[in-house]
Amino acid sequence: MNQLATFFGVSSTTVNNWFDTGRFLEIKKVNQDFLISDHSIWISPTGEKVPVLNIVERYMQNYANPTATMSDDEYKRMRTEEIMKTITYFESRYGGTFQQVAKQKGDPYSSGDWQWVREGKEWHALLLELGHFG
View 1 (cartoon, rainbow, N blue to C red):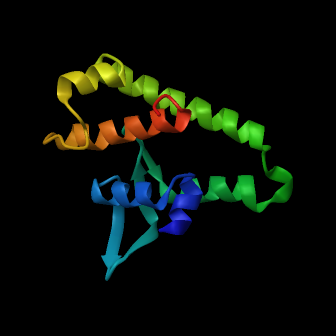
View 2: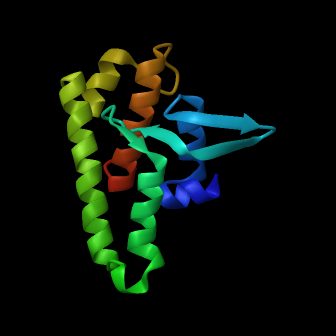
């Protein structure tokens, strides 16, 4: 689990949430562990199906080879761009800002709408990462 979190650049809690909400395909659970194979798929917030192997390979290209690593500033810039792209997707999908949608749909942490729970929590986490909430 910690390895996947490292490869994706997120917390282990986020990876656990992804498992719980079905964001991974072609995985097996053995005891308390999830087994990822070369055929495992991750479903992005935009619905794109990405082979986990591609994520790992990209990570290895960027971080396993010291000459290929990016600077902290470059990483932060790229991470911010990806976060903003996902936030923009959610704003378009739901027709407003997180605050507007949460006011209409309710708190994603206590909603009965499983899709809003999953996407609302992710949207909220991205806003927190950018520092839009205290």
